[in-house]
Image 1 (cartoon, rainbow, N blue to C red):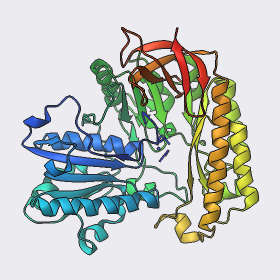
Image 2 (image 1 turned 120 degrees about the vertical axis):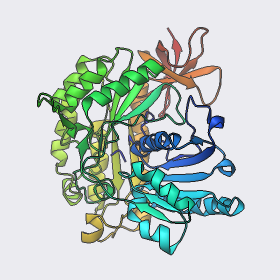
Image 3 (image 1 turned 90 degrees about the vertical axis):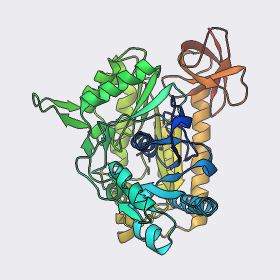
Image 4 (image 1 turned 180 degrees about the vertical axis):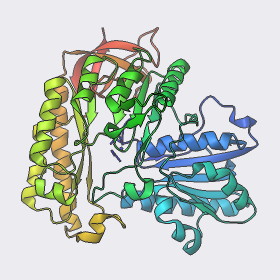
Length: 474
């Protein structure tokens, strides 16, 4: 995955990279005896995991807080995808320890992917934390916390082939009350050479369909109007009903969730190009509430580099997949993840990536320069031989081109009218609403009495920038 939302910054925008001090929505946090403070980094899956952790902690008597100094337990849910995220987490742990010194008895814990990879360093060498918990071990949090209260450092980073947390109802944190995540599977079987996820999150396993549908229905009943189905590779979702041996694949699941209610919008992330099928495209085409938006990471536009990345498709094959998407869903928006400066990438191969972007006409992309991750196949087999200044130069060119493509796509929307789900106030003015259309484009428009967050409305586009559309109600 996108690494990568409902604001999809993982989804590839696989969510805001840092979510500080999120609180449980709909809870009287003051009623709890103890408080926890949590920050989440990385992908949308990490944010979803934090909501599972919140549910587990609530049963242990912990409410949430936005204030570090109030916390009895400070947690950071980490990402190992990029070096920058790890550096940020280390800096935050230093801050947390200063709080701990001022308030003895406060516990500090690291959750998630970085926890699994750096457990020994965090616990023993640097002594920055009291507990370390991997993505499959959150059920063990109560036991580890009890040990930590008695002065024992605790760790559980064991990976599981069964854990999906299907029976735990996530407590929504930092929610806008309109959009929510639903995790449908965990782990990844793809061994992309640059990626550490298979080693930190384990093998793929799909959650049972009935619990997914029940969660979607519950979210709709609570007033949510959009869900994003999450997985490292959602298109490989596959669950067998033990009652009748019926096999539910991702296209089937999409339709099942879409049928919860026509006013419940469905998004999903992430898709691996090799696994997205025509059945998925037909489901998007046939159900108005399955959004016309696909995040389809390319990573590189050159076949030789793709082979080094172990992406299992060629540039030509990817181009055909994009062509097929536009054939079935002409108004579909496609976004991507792009890595600049992968091992041995030449200038000509970099130009192939720019060409692939022009061909696919991505409405947006999540763009990064290559950062070697210890333990990956690329780190073991290839030399990270592209100088940083060249990586940054290539990334700058990719970002510039994406801005041009995004602007051109948005300018074409001027004069069109879209169904928009209102997400809340515009960042710039409380006199304007912001929302998104089916293509995941942000639209800003003046408020009108009687409309509120969570409502659908029709908005005509009057002008555009590379990042958003500006319109008026019709």
